Image 1 (tube, rainbow, N blue to C red):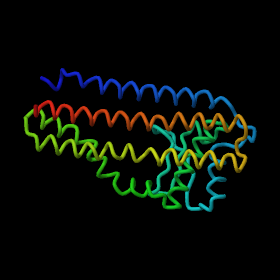
Image 2 (cartoon, rainbow, N blue to C red):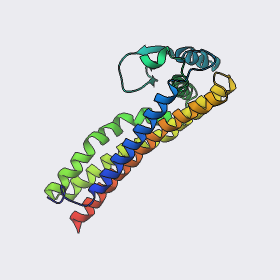
Image 3 (cartoon, one colour):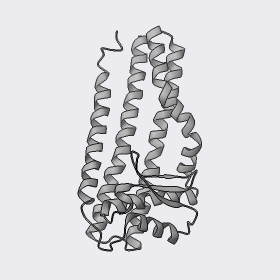
Image 4 (cartoon, rainbow, N blue to C red):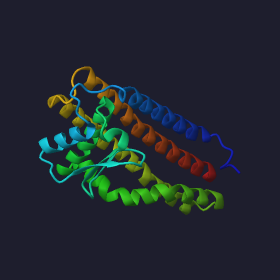
Length: 228
């Protein structure tokens, strides 16, 4: 019963609150700057192709996708996928998002170390994230500490990947903003708007990492409580 009624639930609530705040913040920023068109009249897909071309990347396809949670770059298929609302949009938000995904493509082309590491360890970390929590809880319920410890270790792998994503995402945004400015795809207030969108998006990853860390801390505290 101690698992279902304990003070450590506050850690879960804090993590959930952070995630909700970050999600609301990025949605608000995207909604605001999706209404503001760029002076160049360039669409997000056109901007993406230009950025890739001018960085010597010719093997990446820019494609439109109709479904999905977000835009993304797939290093395995060399595809930069933009959601339908962004693909043909000339808005500051859409161009900023497209440039961010180009940042990932440039990371891939230049063998950016954190991205390379993430690619190789992602399957193992995903397994740990999916199973570790339940393994640890099973160990707590049955009072078998080695099983709890195994679950905590597995869950830690999932936490690690959320932390590793932080430099990857912020570096992609930094590259995007520098390119948008240097190529004058966005200027002045347009660039400031794109920065706000990408910063808000980056904070969702910070919130996800913080939430994962808090969940891991909760498992550790529950484990210690059981031992005591």
